[in-house]
Length: 377
Image (cartoon, rainbow, N blue to C red; front, top):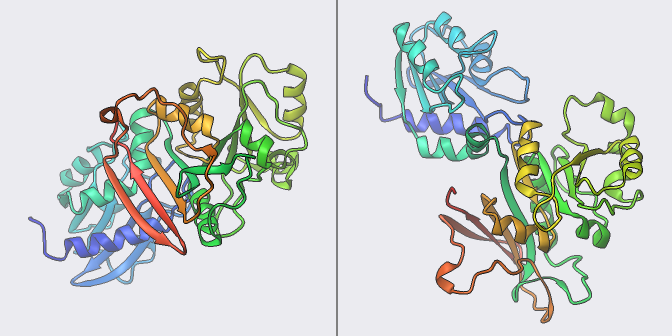
C-alpha cells in the first residue's frame, strides 16, 4: 500500500509527542506514536524516561476502542529485542498498517523490526518525514553509530567577538532571556562540560535554575586537578554522598576528568565529596585527551554533551574536529580588547576556514542566536 495524503500530518503529530521526551530519556531515542482509525487520532504515546514504557505501548494503553484495522504512526522503527518488544505488542493488537519515519540504526533492530511486522501480514510504510525524524534523533543516531556523545559548544560573545573583558570579567554578556535559553539547553543535554579555567574564574554551578528540567551531569576537564575543594560545582547539595547513592548513573553528578599526574590524595578527597574522578591519558601537550574522554563518557551512557567553555577547550575541540553543533549568543555590545572564544586553529588561509553544513539565525530579546551544524566528519 502506498503513502497516503495524510501520512505526513499524522507523522508530524508523532514527532510533536516525541519532543516531549527531550532531556528525559537519557541515551535512548525520542519516540512518539499516534494511533489513527479512519481520520481520527484515538491514541497517543511517547517515551518519558530511560526505562519507561515505549511510545507504541503507551499509545496502545491509552487508545480509545479497538486497534483492529487501525494505523499506527511512529517516528522510529519499533524495537524487536527487549523482553517485551514493541513489535510483539503491535502484532498482537492486529494493526492493519504501521507507518515508520526512520529505521533504527541500533544493530539489534536496523530493519529487523520492520521485517518482523511484514512477516505477520502488517502493511508497513517507511520513509515519511524521514529527514525530520532523523534530525530529531541526531544525538541518538551518532551515539549508536560511533559510540561518541553529540557535542554542542555554546558561548556568549559581544559584537566584536569577546567572551570576556581584558580583566576576564564576563558576567553577564548576554541578556536574561538568553540566560534562560542556556539553562534550557543544559536541561536537554545529559552533560555540561567546562575547563578548569572557567571554574577558577567564575565558580559556576552549571545547574538548571531558570527553566524547568533536569540538572545535567557536570564535567570539569582539569589535567592537573587544580580544582578547589570549595568549588560550587562540587559542594552543592546535589553532589552529596546520600544523593549519589540513589543515582543509577552519573546523571546529575560531577565528573572530574584528569590525567595520571593528578595528586592521589586529592582524588580520594574529591571522591569522598561525591565527585567521580576519571583518569584519562594525556595528549601530546600533557593535557586530557579529549577524544578519549568523549569515548569514556559514551561508555558510561552519556550521549550528549554541551561545552560551555573556556576558550582553550573550545579551541581544542574545534582543532580535533570533535564538534557537531555550535551555538553562539551574540550580544549588541562592544568591549574592544578582551578574551576571544576561539584561539589559534592553525588556519592561515581563508579558504581553510571551518564551514557549516547548516546555519540558522534568530533573535532572542536584544540578542541574536547563531546555530550552526558541522558536516559529519
